[in-house]
Amino acid sequence: MSQPLLLSKSVYKQLQVDCEWLTLKVQFIWRYGVTGNMKATTKQVLTGATWLVVLLAMIGGTMLWQQQVHKSKPVTTITVTSTERIPMVLLLDDHLTHNQIQQLTAHIQNSSATQTLVTAKITATGTVTFKGQLLNSDNRPYIQVQLPKNLDSNRQTHLLKQLLTAARQQFKFRRFNLVSYGRGGLTATNYVEHTTTSLSPQHLVLMATPFNGTSRQSNNRRQTTPVAAESQTATLAKLIAHRHTIDSKMQVLIVAGKAIKADQPLPLQSALAGQSIFKPVVRVYQQKVLRSWRTQSGLLNNHQIGNTIQTFIN
Image (cartoon, rainbow, N blue to C red; front, side, top):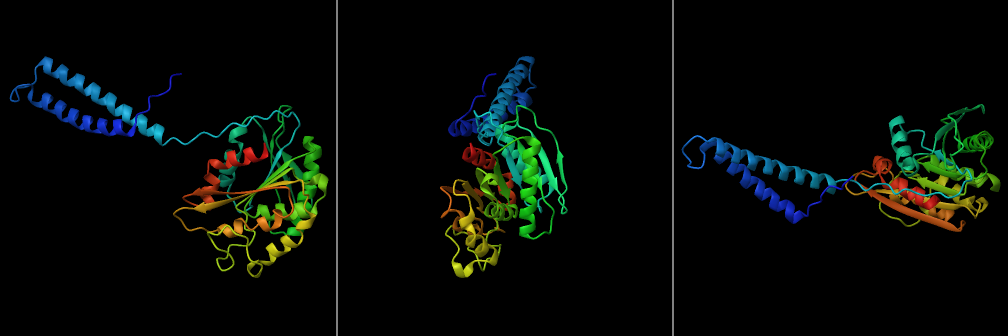
């Protein structure tokens, strides 16, 4: 299929001028004819119609140019050569709406849309259920885990460990990657501090995690530096105190959002406060700030999310 013709800005501006001139010319010919005071003859009508066709073609070209200029960049396709099944476990904030979860998972899946997404759920009493089945060709599937709400961090960590153990048996995998969002990142961090090496993820991605809460008194909303000890919340201080138990071979990526022209509900410094937990411990640590017009919802809708995660993991 042939590619559409792209026009430069200078050509586009000239076309605007030409279109205005042609509009006036067609109107003149149609109303007055060549002499200016007689009705248009058949020849003159045909001439006007010809100019009108040219005018419409030019307008179509300018609209096509505008469409191409504003078209977002496609997500880069990641090629996976390993045949070993290594799923991506998604641990998302339980306060996200169904639509927000769909938007985020769609962005993450975009570069490997052929891989299946299944759901693993556990109740407060430890009952595990699975929804969906994996194909033999699913070597990088997605497992969205669902934990009970309103439980303390230790209980959630225990249930997550139980759920991942059952998922390994159900879907036949040994290694996995863990991707979290929002408060799911706090559960994920607590999990990697209290699990065994064999149940630790290869890669850990923490997006928009409120490591140091959301208070502006404790955090600078634009700073990327570590949170000072006197400004650390009890949650952050506790996670830092237990960081020595984290598997040093694990690779960690922290992703934060930065609003360009909007209020920022999650301060940037809090979202990056995990650097004090992981950076001194793991061999590979990265952090990335994705800019958007709106932060929380903007990060969910940011087309860079899929590329950022897939490039880091693969």
